[in-house]
Image (cartoon, rainbow, N blue to C red):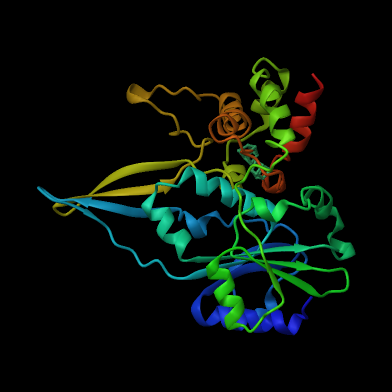
Length: 327
Ligand code: SF4
Ligand code: SF4
C-alpha cells in the first residue's frame, strides 16, 4: 500500500511525458477533461458523464487524400496522452474497442501513444453510493486479468493505494516514479475462465426475440432521436466515411456516426432500413445485445448507465431491459 503523496509523485512523472485526461468535478457532474492541476482529479471512483472514447477515436479526422494519380495517407500528430482513473466498466469498453479496431492503423497509433491508468475505489465516499451499487457488483477477484490497462490503482477504505502494472509501459513509468510496491498483472483476454458474461447471454435471447414487444411502440413515441445516448456510450463506434473535394484533390474523412441520425442506414434513392424512431431504437439495442455478442463474444453494453443519465425524455436502459426480461 502506498500513500497519496506517492500517487501525486507518479502523476508528476506521467505529466512530464503525457498530457493527462482525468475525471474532474464540474458542479455536481464528473467530466473527463485535460487537467492542468493534479489537485483537480476526482478519486470518488464514479463514472464520468462523457466518454473516454474520443481520446482513441476522434469525432472527425481526415484519413487520406486522393489526387489525380496519387493516393496519400494524411499524417497526424499522435500526442502522448494519459487516460487517468478509467473505471473498470470503461476499461471493458476499451477492451471491446481493441477488438473492433484491431486492424485500424489510425486507432492503433492513438492507442499505442496512450497510457491507460485504471482506478477502483474499494470504499466509496458515502455521497457517491447511488452511482456505486451497479458498478461495485462488476468487480471480482480476477477482474484485472480481463481488462486492458498499463497501470491500475486501487484505493483502500483507509485511503491508501495499491498499484498494479499491466504492461512494460506501465512498469517503466512506475519505476521512473520510484514506486517499488506494485504487482504485475498479465492480461489474458476479455473473457473470464468461467465463460462469457452471464448477463450478456441472458439478454441476447431477450432482445433477439423482442421485436414485437409493445415497449418498442411506447419508446418510439417518446424518443426524440437526439442521439445523445449513443454519443456518450463508451461502446458505440459507428462511423461515416465522406469524400470532400478540396482544390485538386479529394479528402476522405471519417466521422463518428449515430444510429439515431436521419442519414444513418440511408440507401441510394432515399430508402432506409431504420426509418422510424422505433426501428432506430431496436437497431441500437440489437447492436449492443445481439450483434456485438455474436461477433465478439463480449457484451456490447458495459452497464455504465450514461445513456439513461443524459436522455432528455428519461428513457432508462435498465428499466427497459427489466421490462423486456419479464415478458
Ligand atoms: S437520448 Fe433518449 S431521446 Fe435521445 S435518442 Fe437516446 S433514447 Fe432517444
Ligand atoms: S449503459 Fe448505456 S451508455 Fe453504458 S454501455 Fe450500456 S448502452 Fe452504452
